[in-house]
Length: 130
Image (cartoon, rainbow, N blue to C red; front, side, top):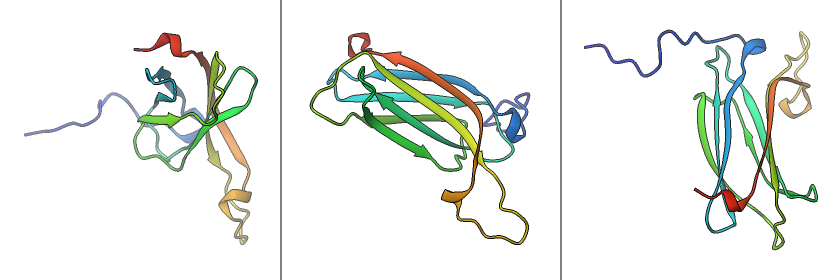
């Protein structure tokens, strides 16, 4: 018996070709949480990412860092900070790889430059609840 967990025609891509397929935000009815769905193309090397949610004034309400994900399909529930949540809200995702350290040097990951391969932005409001 053969079991396939991924589509065999969906070829993993090198870092420079990895793209965002879907980026969705689904606000919860409580006005405090938002579910984020992110889907990437299959990849050969595990990518990193950052997702940030801002209110209408540009104040950051939530963020999440993705460190070398193994799965191209991800779901997160973000809890929005602050008592004043003014919509509409914006969410932004950046998918990136860390540049390699120069030969013979050991540069900490947080000090290595990022090579952003794709980005996406969206807006949502809690009146769009599902």
